Length: 409
Image (cartoon, rainbow, N blue to C red; front, side, top):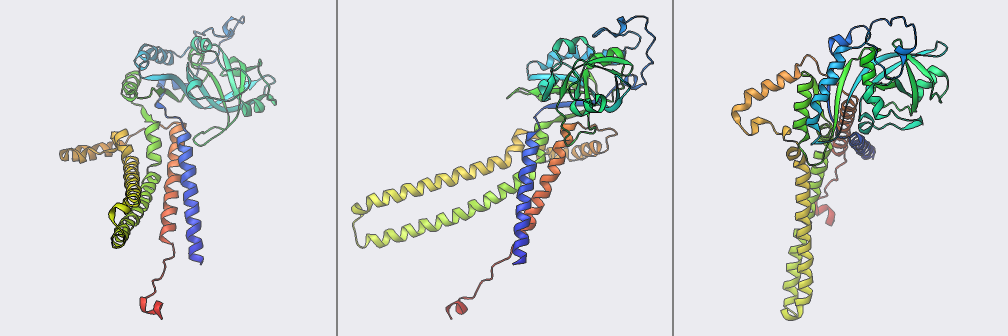
């Protein structure tokens, strides 16, 4: 009894983990991401702000030549020259930067630290945010580098001690930004900082107000297009040496073990149904022979036709179910051929394949994005769920078979 209860608990926990992890992994949008370290020049400490005799240097959208980050500006310009290669195969794309620590100072001297998201055009199309107050950044503000900002609700409370801060000013790296909106604060798996501020990427480049740690190129692939090839060529031509992610493939890889488990259970159930269906066909043959002794075949023809039709429908259902299970099993392979090792196609590629795996595993630098971390986290959770299900099946109490002689007695 205890063993059966323990098995049931393991099965319930495993099914719940697999369902939650798979749903959460597929909740991550299927984007293409390329993340790379910002230039060394961009990572240097920003210059101290020069004394101003008037307020012209702080006008919204006006660059400060003395503080401009020329390396970052050149990277932005080089992407502008290359982005036409993404237009045909993607529905949206954006360039952004990230800094894990940025100190924001407000009126009255209060300050708080959080993550800085330097965003470009199309960022909020790819990464939607829930707006609580104010507005999002206008496309012309992102293009011109206007000194405007969005704050998480938690950040606004930490700096201003209030939630409605639209129209107020904050200071970031010696530069003044005007708050135009407040976003809902929602920290999820993969997010390092508890709160964040969003400013135009060009404004960061023109003022060098913060040290960006990484730059990221993101695109939403158009359905049925070979967007990954175009995205890879543009990204590597823009800044070589980064890490590339196809979140569609990452989601499939994260849920591959629940997929295999479901297919295995499905094939087991299909086999049981097929055996039962075969026994039913044999019983039908016996019933037909028995009835032929009493009635003519012409009188049995309506009944026999109905039985044959029902069996034909059963065969069709079994065939369609087997095809669906086989398709679900091999779908990751024909959707993403990268899952098929070259050694299965060309045996002489064994050495090259193992060398490639060794070089990938020993890479000096591998950058992660929030979304890739989230998918990997739920992938680990799904594997634990599969382990629980297999453990529950292994611990299931087995029925003892009673010998026929004892059963008759």
